[in-house]
Image 1 (cartoon, helix red, strand yellow):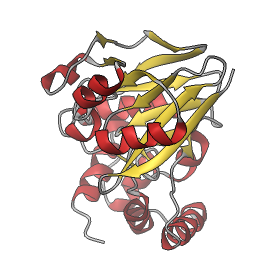
Image 2: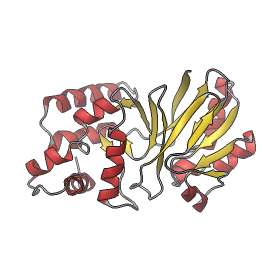
Image 3: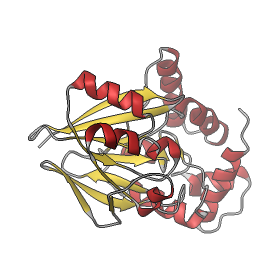
Length: 253
């Protein structure tokens, strides 16, 4: 089994992902941030879209559902919350499996950014599409959830094998790196930040990342180690995470 991933920038800082199961040729889009851009990329690839897989309900992730479905007839699968703003044919939850040809995606509940946020994990190919829960050197803001929920979601993703390739939905990494440098003096973080700045100076993407790299350098996954250095009394791990998240929310660098 093998899964092809076609990544492309869209909107101001989103990434679009078209994926294809090599065995059958069936294709899907992960989220629908920009219907026009996605349909144009479909034309370039020559792929026929079977599925739309939504991670959460925000307009830059589900806003193109209706237009893309009208153009392709693709079935829309995602969390029930998508129905707030867009069509959804099948709601899925933790433990469900979504099949794209011979590729099987486990649905992981990773709420916090939104309450019903999910990720799609292809264990055989070691690939995870995580929406706005985990970013390269960052994590999503808690628009709906609480720190304990978001921390549990991040730990759910961090528990995946280190070699797992992680496709996150935004190019926020340079800003995340500047924040990471402000709270973490680990040499691995400094080295990664320099690599990120060099990539962005050349206009190259910093996505995908890996679970192992995020475990070693992401300040939100390292929060229990960092919070005491930031002057926060060490409590439960989710409280340490909340302190780091609050610092990022107010960071001006």
